Image 1 (cartoon, rainbow, N blue to C red):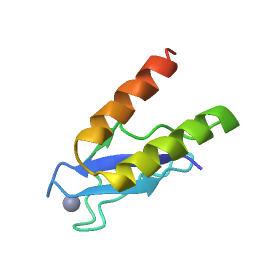
Image 2 (image 1 turned 90 degrees about the vertical axis):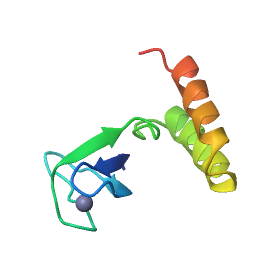
Image 3 (image 1 turned 120 degrees about the vertical axis):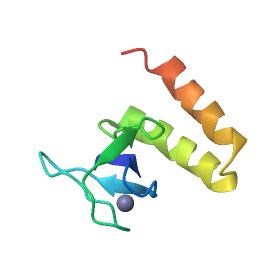
Image 4 (image 1 turned 60 degrees about the horizontal axis):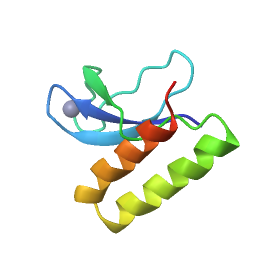
Length: 81
Ligand SMILES: [Zn+2]
């Protein structure tokens, strides 16, 4: 399922949400729909990207800080589309 990181532009709350079709997610903190989609977590479309996303997620779980940027750079290097 496609999972995205969002930042609420209303209250700055950060959260992850599933996006299905044209359904727009809402901020769980203030119910605003004024959201910015973050690019840190890729959409899971294939087995290949699924594996990579799981690696990135595990890394992010270990360290919420610096390694998040490293994982994103690695993803971008491997996905040049
Ligand atoms: Zn909000």
